[in-house]
Amino acid sequence: MMQTLQIRRAIIPGLLLSCGIPWALGLEHEGWFTESPRAEISPDFSVGDAGELVATSDARIPSQGQWVKIFPLAGKGFCRFTIQRRIDAITHARRSAVVKLTFTDDKGELVQDGDDKARPVYPADLETPGEWTTVEGTYPVPARATQARVELELRWAPGGSIRWRNGSFTLVDPPTPRTVRVGAVHFRPRKGKSARDNCEMFAPLIADAARQGAELVVLPECVTLCGRGLKNGYFQTAESIPGPSTEYFGTLAKEHELYLVVGLLERAEALVYNVAVLIAPDGTVAGTYRKVCIPREEIKGGVVPGSEYPVFDLPFGKLGMMVCYDVHFPEVARELGKQGAELIAMPIWGGHPDLAKARAIENQLYLITSTYTEADRDWMRTGVWTPAGELVATTETWGTVVVHEIDLDLRAPWHYVGDFRGRIPRERPVAPAR
Image 1 (cartoon, rainbow, N blue to C red):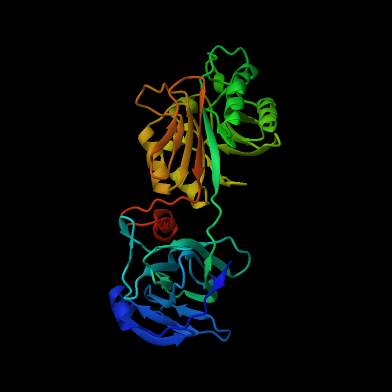
Image 2: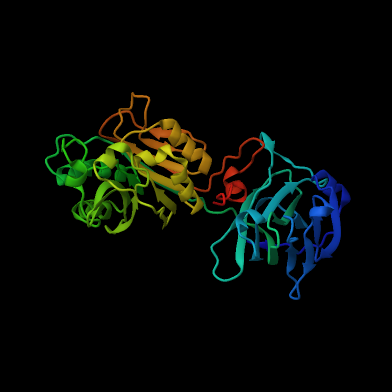
């Protein structure tokens, strides 16, 4: 059951000092009060006609300051904070219009939570139509916390302003875990006489993954090309998408009621792309990703790069796709992460395993890889990589599959840093002016 807390609280000087805020302003409204690190960079704070909390930056300097409210924690478990925000003349809202929530004791000090302090968390901007954006987050309440400090901050946006309205801090039931069983195939086709031959070799492995409860299964790169010894293989095996191979894999996806990610070569008029194709449980093509980073061998063979980074909203979470050489460059995974991808499926011929680890860590997402590399080589592995960069599930033998359950809501805070995934949009850099 949801319990809404209606709280009014005056400024507590000791609390401000303990949180490292040296300068407090006098403006208050319904329990909210204003702060800034220094008077010379303070925004202009006001209250709108409809009771909105307003912060406006000086046009000459990047002002910094926030509206603050202290909510006592009447119970433990989980809490949710939500508020609506409208910006004006702010270019990068994700960095300049920030909500921060900090759990503290009665003195305003960070509380111990496991092996570290409970670090601040950052509710996310939701996709909201219209001028007002909803900012919301649900979090476990640390056992020793007695209050939650909410900050609505304006920073780094000369001449910009923010209006905040309809703020709500509530105690809620624990959210339902978002778990999904993902699978990856470790198999290298050999001596296939046709594209269909190669595709059919994967059928028993997909069936095995389905028997283990897999909801998403990832196959390797260029499955219709591998092992056939073709001289001009990129061109010779390229086909339309949808096409014969996606139709065949569609029958398997429908039979086993799961999602498939398959590496193929796509022909679009005169062009050839190296692609990852997402096939839905109804057998249809749900989406395609065209490999952006093309290595020299594919360039020589006439393969051209894609330029888009689609993310697909599946029943269990948001899925992005990469292909092989993409993992050697941080931009591809970053673009997918920026658009909300929580896991990335990556068909791959081979690649540096430390880069799979890096892409997972720096974007705080899961990576599922299916490779043609032998398991005993110090090179890419077939398996599941966690946001901590750990290969938690893999397989050692050709002709096998790995299936592993992941929790897309699981967060593993770093010492001192806290929940890095929540900090990424608030603190990652903006593109440099050119």
